[in-house]
Length: 293
Length: 343
Image (cartoon, rainbow over all chains, first blue to last red; front, side, top):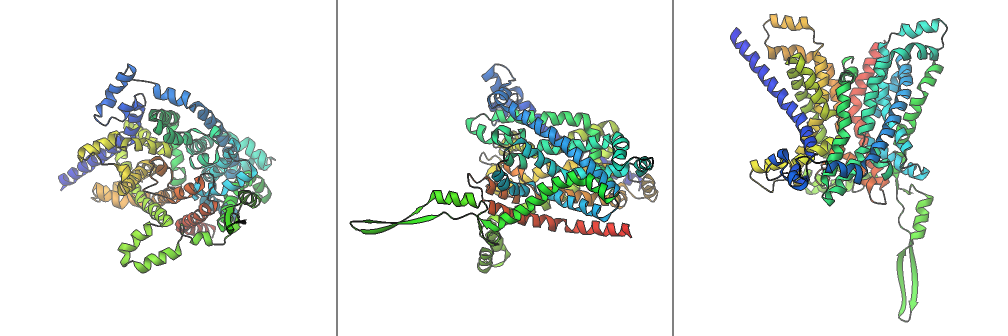
């Protein structure tokens, strides 16, 4: 009996190890393959005849003289002017994150400290707003924005992204502020501070871990957004993600699909670095809402 | 907190949400009730030696002026909702009358744009969500059994598919399954069929999109469950072991019930995110085989030079109603919890 249980335990373990191994391969392989392939020519990246070509770079050597080439990156960054999209992304993401966090900390703090029923209703409304497919909102923006002549501007997209970000930011910061003991700011107020002074001098110095975690997610939302940026930005103001998507259409026709591959790798690299440095915060942020229920 | 202070603290975020989330919903609602002006026609009579002729031509100037003056278009009531490309009540009734049983009713329904999009969206949502829940839990248990040093690496790798932009992630996969990409070409070799192409077949495309959805969202459920596993009470596990429960029984009777609140949280998040499936369809260039509600709206808005605001808005309203129906159980439960806590 004991032996049987022992056996079952090990098979279960082996099965679970295999499952994890399979998952990790499935998760990592597409990225490794694409990063590696971005330094090849199209004949190797799409190597129908023999997939080992992609590894040894047969066509790349034949066409460029070496097993690796930067042609894709040159084409994307210089010829297609991808650097413009990088600058646009930097501007839009920076302002979206800063404004979202400012609005979110104030609102999240108020929601965490107010015991009234309307605070609950605001959180519920935010939850419903969080579930809205972004494209449905975009169809509401298009006509008024065209009428007011603010369509296509960076500022418009920034403020729209801030607003779309708010429900999530509010929920997250609200739960972080609930974890900061009420006594801290209340004792400051007993000592004569106004509510805002208490917030400024007592809460702000201790809130940074929560703000950084929330900021990471605001960053990801703005950086990865497609629905808003692809519909609301004019061509010269386009960010990286819609630019990559529109590359897909144009460069495929010209046979320059490696430009798109290089652009995709360029757009993913910052995320890779982000996960490397902030893995702990991202994991804690993902589970913050969940574990506390 | 006093009402006044609360108001000032909440003002910026509330303004942003009202202006750019609540009002757009109102704007969508209004737009969906209007429809674009018809072109202004002028009938001119020209009389020649062989009698008079009436010609009808489009007065472009007048049309442009009318559209300029009333950009919303003319009032159409709920007309757009029931037209051929939305709820299509007349067509559905017709199909119902002519079809024998469900077997021929459903394919008929798939010819209607809106139902096609809705059926795909629902299929996607309700296959990806359970798959992600089960596989995520399995991977979480597996990683939890790993030695400590490997766990960090496993989480690092798992985060990649989740955090990469949906459009970028699906583009990477779409290159790999392309007929000339590594997976596509390998499949052709395995099945010995050089014409096999995932991108040319509707069922394969649906499966591909669902596989992509699982790949992209599994990390979320995995990481949430993994965090939950760290908080399983050790003495309960010990007690179960002493009572002679094997690993599997402990799993079903101790661990899973402990994770139940997380399951409902993850389910809620997954339902919300999967219901708005959008980017993968763009990246896989799968519009010919699969339309979701979101891509349906986008294709109306992208209509070259002449966006179909009314149609897009009507679909948006129907989508929003869908979201609310999806969320109702959760909202009711939260409301009950809140009341219980309040009393």
